[in-house]
Length: 253
Length: 253
Image 1 (cartoon, each protein chain N blue to C red):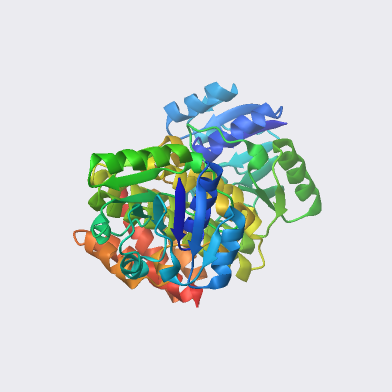
Image 2: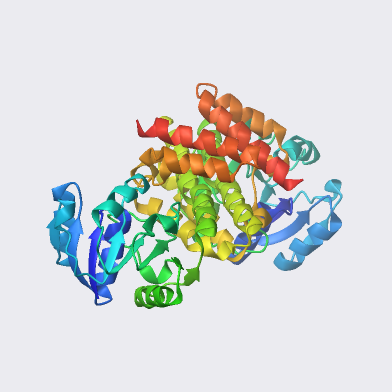
């Protein structure tokens, strides 16, 4: 399978490496920034390009893994390709690709970083296609990567993406707030890393509502009021503390 | 070492089991609810009591592991004991125990559940004492349990506890919101469990601000506005979404 990847960010990087490992031939990596294209291209033994009109027409699979806002521009630039064109966006409808005869969505439901390798065997892949032959082709690609595979239409994929913003992006931000609070008082973030791990492990076998702990679910007003006092210089953190505590109490009722 | 435990909740349960394993003799478990005292007492081979005046005076260690609001009441009830009296509360000052000659704090910086066993080797223990012999005694107990040990005064312990509320309690609530969003659309929480794990793993070696992903940090207004649209029936979730996105954008600047 010959692959062209449009994009060189976190998703593009991890997906290209996994495709390469599974035996695919990476023809080209495109990025607006030549140095980013070159960096990924070197890893997966592909040609780096930064002029979109240079994309070859002979690939079997075109992966569009760019910031959502730039997908339309990439679609225009790829006019006339005959291979299967997929995007990897959780929040973008499949219809954005409807000008291509063969098109689909391959949404990896995972958070990627350029530095940390991700085992694709553990990455759920959400597939969408408008006809059975393309879905079969997507499934073959997904099976090469090895993770759990789900068929998810655009509407449900957007829900998954929204849910992931809460359970991943917002969660990481709360880790960051925890870090900043510690840092401000010369306490080491290392002290709460085991807690962060255990909190994630607890919901691997159980549901979050069954394992909720802390002052809000205990209705421990005294502790909550002390905490708000400790945050008196941080009105935005107080606001987050109040809102999430209120939401926990409401959920528990 | 002879131990009496006041309380039978998550912290009491895990701590008593770990103390028992490390060779301590559990004399009594007190709980207001006789059935809760009995359940834990059976596991650690202790006497179950629900009348606080029945606490023996002969123990080496009295662990007060009850809801913070009830600590003063327990302190009054234990008047006259000569053993070391500790509480396990993150948010409570050591001074609350000052009527005891030997007193200290043993705060396990971890989230516990009654059902999931916790390896105490991975639980950071935060110790506080007002004199060196008691601190040495606390360290001996902590070393029996096997995890990393920190000396942390009351002021810093409260900061740790506050930080833990963000990085654990609020995080679990966000998992719960993710679950509810999926559930409402007949999507399986299992689909985002790998994402939850990876999000926690990423900050074990790195700092959260270095690995933040998602629409807010990308300043992807289009996706954020779509997400708010999907939450139009859930004003409180919209509020949380807006506030945390704003906070992420502010942090990134």
